[in-house]
Length: 64
Image (cartoon, rainbow, N blue to C red; front, side, top):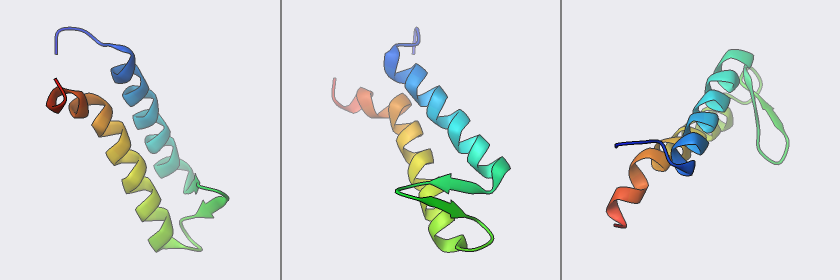
């Protein structure tokens, strides 16, 4: 990776969002999900957002 394109910056923003969700203990889907009340849904949502953030860095190399 020689430079950051737009999708790498989007990935950084999404990764920051995931870190904030881990810190705050809640995540937004179609509604706010709290870690203490619905742990399974919370962790699935955090993992989904983390996968989307990672795909911004590694996903494009398979398409080229």
